[in-house]
Length: 321
Image: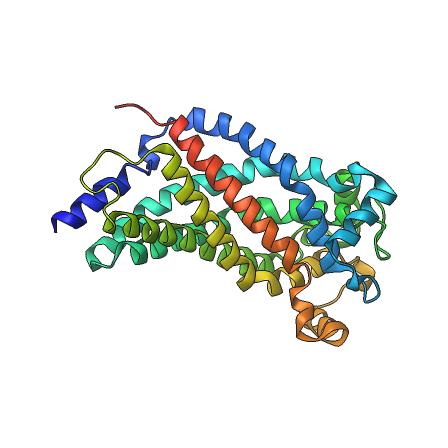
């Protein structure tokens, strides 16, 4: 019991709860940090999206071929198609997501505590529930932004239409399909992103707890001072990589179907079943994993970078008691 209490105390020194944050500072500074990360990592999303919507002839291209094609035709700006739309919608979407995530996580931990489960299992359940609910709350903002940005990412590629910016995409979608057009694939987005978010946060929370338990069982930090910042960051980064690998492998097929549904024009709008049949006809079951490499890199890079920035942001905005 004493060892478990010491382990809990040591782990608690690595985490900052929602009630200990300066919320105003958290939102303002967080907007700047996450915008910077989006600038750095956005091209990976463009590459992944293009690979997922490629026609049968272009589907054989690997990520490097896609990059060369974008740079040849559009230069570096081609890697940032749709960026303005994404960054505009990302700020409110992240505020909704992070608020829902932190508040739900606190409540979920309190709910699972009476069951006396191991710390990794408690963390997996609480973080998974929080990640899923946070994703559900943010989808109403994220899906229209996703549709507009993805159409900009693939414009002129493999026969897709061209647009004059995000507003032109929104105007044409509303004209041809109404408001429902901006929520095309909403159900599939919820099915894709909510489990993905649940898996990511569950994997992150449980892997962190597991790594710390191994360190503490080996005598590291046991009965000693708080873990160093370097050690905390290393464990958080490892958790982010594990979470990204797990989530990308599980959810890529649904993401491929969702992306294809969202970028198709109204005149050739397919159903989810037709998309599935087309993917199988073109590449077999491996077609569902188009863009897996970039998505794995994307989720691992985004996840690890975002979680390190997020944890740093929480330390920066912690209220000293």
